Picture (spheres, rainbow, N blue to C red):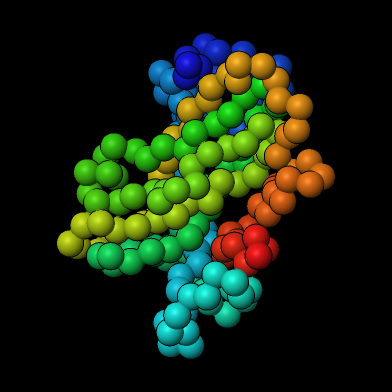
Length: 186
């Protein structure tokens, strides 16, 4: 069951939910709005012609940085990785679910293709897997509202939190945009 605005605020006060920086003005009825950070990764198609999931990705993507004056354009059928500005975390009794903003979805912007899950015990800047499903380019601006995070209680606190030894937690505590580490599964 998703937490209401009242429960989100209670859990933030108790330290069970972390949102940094935090402002009450971004609390919605059952979520909190998150904002677009400045770093992006896009596929480096001039140096790559195929993705091999068994190989490291150090040259697969290139960095793009925006700021208050420089926006990012996501073209139709294009994919980019980015981050939210806020560090978001949950204790071992909660999970978080990253969701899109309906106003952006109505423009064709998908904010995560699969990884919208905040595991118990993790605290990081959530990665956005941006995809433009529309037929027109979309301008994205630094610190614009880009997503929302909803929270749920687990049926009981988990014993192993994300990042625990032996769990292969590849993105634990990330604060920078990271390319895929799928190759570590082989």
